[in-house]
Length: 163
Image 1 (cartoon, rainbow, N blue to C red):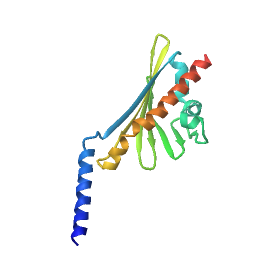
Image 2 (image 1 turned 120 degrees about the vertical axis):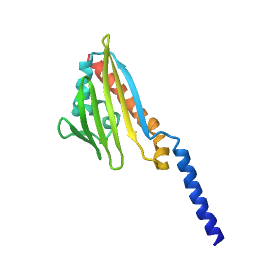
Image 3 (image 1 turned 180 degrees about the horizontal axis):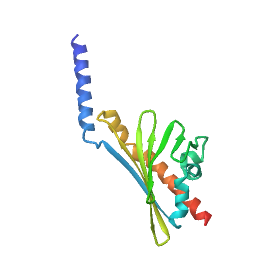
Image 4 (image 1 turned 180 degrees about the vertical axis):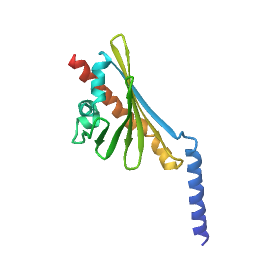
């Protein structure tokens, strides 16, 4: 009985300790990447505004059977993820990426200067206070950031080779 009581108290203390450490991590996670493309922003915007063009440059959709399938101009499917365009104005596109257990928001922004277009892409996610979500969010930059870099490099090569 004493051993069971010690085990139960240890589990509770361990849970509280992990929760206290996780509370030091932010709840809003932002992963951002950017690339400079030698082209005007209209050439780049064509690939971003149309979901059917995403398969040409998006890393996950480019090299597998997993493709972005457009339902219409504001909604697409990427596997089990539903991509919903929230807004598109002034060369800024905002999307909601809704999966089974998470929702993320992405923003793609084009900034043109001297025939160079800066493409800035970011994902935002809000996680709850649960320690497993907070610790899991530490991997967002490594996993999502790498894919974003590869996708932006693909976009750069695609646009620059078309000119």
